[in-house]
Length: 354
Ligand SMILES: Nc1nc2c(ncn2[C@@H]2O[C@H](COP(=O)(O)OP(=O)(O)O)[C@@H](O)[C@H]2O)c(=O)[nH]1
Ligand SMILES: [Mg+2]
Image 1 (spheres, rainbow, N blue to C red):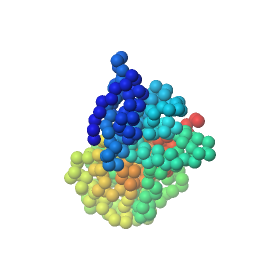
Image 2: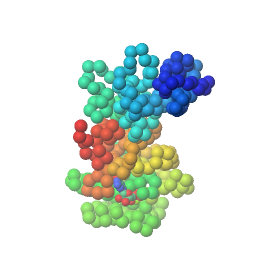
Image 3: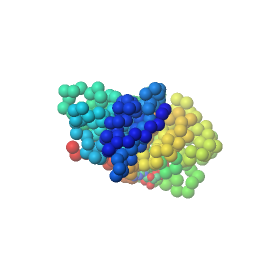
Image 4: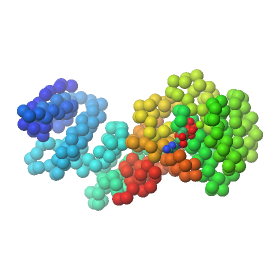
């Protein structure tokens, strides 16, 4: 890759020269605007392999953002060669997804689909209204998980401390009870930390649920036997950090009940994206059947709702969006996630006004 600095009277003028000299695939790395003119640092990536395409997309989007800020997205002047490769009509979607921190390779997939949007549709790429756009984003999220997981008797919730595991179980218990279901019970393995069981113990008492606190490694089987008449058991676990390798391995061992148990990884949507990714990878050996995102109401950006499921090939089972146990837990769907990421629904799950 050859780096070149190209000058012009203004940034658009310098960009025009970049295009003339380095061709349409030039990768713009930096622009400087000064009193004496503008300067653009660009790379000639004509001969580079497709691995460069992501970098190029990033650069194109940076360019597009700058142009949007300057209100320069009117249809290109005839003869103008300033040509962001992301079409201006896709800018609204690109902006929205970038702002939500959707990963560039996923954004590229969405843009590719949208470029093929049918012309006759009123505005097929309007992120706020178009079903075509919604489907493109929804398609990034894997669909329903393995049927075996849905048939499992035990559903264990694992994840970092404070992610909202116990709260999610309490919300599920409330919802199930309200729906008239009485065939489930609650087990907690998080017995040693002071106060750890409180939420679930209270919940079990209020809803008159079968509830077991399990301490020793052997006791889980006893608890399962003693709750033999119940068809669904919600299992709470102690939160573990990404570096607690021994505890992670021990918990994995305790939950190793093939056919009987499905694990769900609970992650707070408001966690910083790299920490979230590290957590997700630390819990991969649990072979989770799905993800549960909590604290959607507190998250600034919701790109994680598509980034992680896509990266880990995992469906999203539920979305927690508040502290209230009697509500604030939504069964997830790909369309719901797309609506949240596109801003068609607020973080409190209400449909946004159009
Ligand atoms: N705002 C908000 N707070 C939540 C949500 N889920 C859990 N919390 C709060 O997060 C804190 C930790 O939750 P907890 O269930 O104890 O986490 P655990 O350690 O994973 O079991 C509590 O104060 C909960 O009220 C949610 O969806 N939204
Ligand atoms: Mg807990």
